[in-house]
Length: 298
Image (cartoon, rainbow, N blue to C red):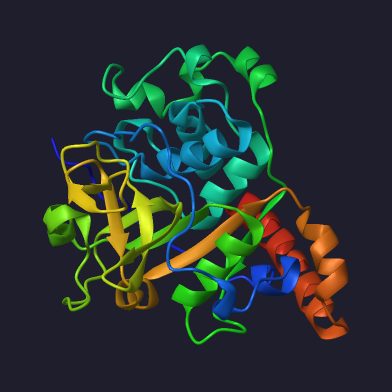
């Protein structure tokens, strides 16, 4: 069974905080072609739209050094987006980030539900979950920060720099071309026909040199029967669940964020000038007025 692609919607908001300015990064000349660690187990979302939950759990697993529940993340995303559990089609990127920062997840062994065993409509229904599990949730991140090409020639180099400088994994969202699922050894081609209909979220865990060229390493959530893997000699072998994204794909089809334990409000106070703060205040007021108008319409 093939995984489903989700509906990706990213609303631009000036209150996004750029990682390069917030935490600092190394010059690209100091970043090697190969670096990063790898998850011990490749996850499998099955034929669901749950990629955002699996992306979050990869990042949480590494940060907390334990296996966390992607199912718990999904029901919180569904709650925040007021999704229909029987037809869960994913959530906007910003909602996925807010759910991760607000709720985190629980250890996987505490989850009453499991993808591949439980009906997905039950997993995506917050009313099916014991609210007492929220007391067990672990929330290690304060905010998400957007990775932009500021200070670098492109997004690809900026992503490599923030990963290497801060020893972090990245959260990537964008359009994954279906044919890439069957790319030999998971190496995504540098030439492709651009498509913007197949939304997917995934984790980037490092960089890998392939024939003298760096590729970003993706531990996908589609199981081990597709993609490729890196052996002990650094050679790419067939199958294994990893994919390797070239510069051309990252720069064309994806947005990248990094989760950090910094509070976004602290970052704003450090970075923002007066005009940005006024703009932020206007947006907050407009959103408040929108809620009032919506309540009257109902």
